[in-house]
Image (cartoon, rainbow, N blue to C red; front, side):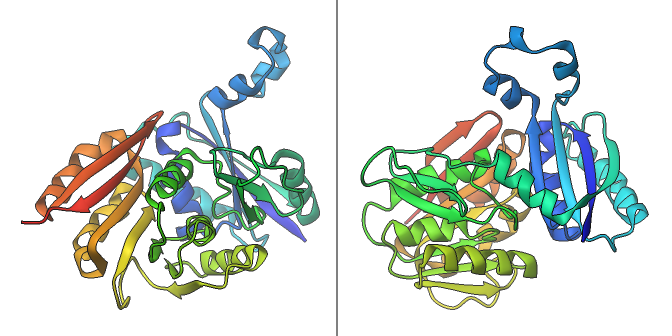
Length: 312
């Protein structure tokens, strides 16, 4: 089977919003990201790059999305152009906005993943590992999270995911009950389970994300995770010690009013996926709903927060 490949040249400021739009609204089967900064950083030395090699590196960011061959190219093209216009209203730079389409055999896509995606030992206690690789821990007690990136609802390589995982690692000093809102690939829920959470719930509104999470949960043999298809915390019963959400600010903001009803006393919340430009708006909503920022982590223009309720 061939896959429709849509390549988009854009700005790193639009990455998270476009990724969410491609997978949730347009039904992308998988998404790859190539950043000029990261590619130059990974090269042995900038001086070693030939002029031809430099031409192949994106000006800022390149997103490649894979779709069913039955998908209409015109539909994707029109939807992306409309999305770019919307993003401009949020004062996000959208880059050159060049869109290219092609077709790729399904097996070639899987080979590309296996060639370029490898284990990532990104913290003292956590590592992400593609399902086809043998885990080689940096420390004897380092925990691996096995992922099938072909499903591509989060490989653990994105800054927002890693910031959330670092906050999770810090917070899970004792067993906590956890809910992961907008779970995507299930990576945060799986990490919580492997760090000792006795009960984990993971929610997502997208059927594709539920399927991806189910596959990754099976790979990691973590039976304490319950999956539920729902929007944010709608139709969720009970309270948790820790609520996690790695989403854009536009989705985090409507989540905040729901938190008190689903958070145990002395509970914590991890919010990631926040562009620094959206932080003042988010902080205003947190204050309105009586939450305080306990810890802020930042990398590049992305921010993650550990927050707690303000008790009178």
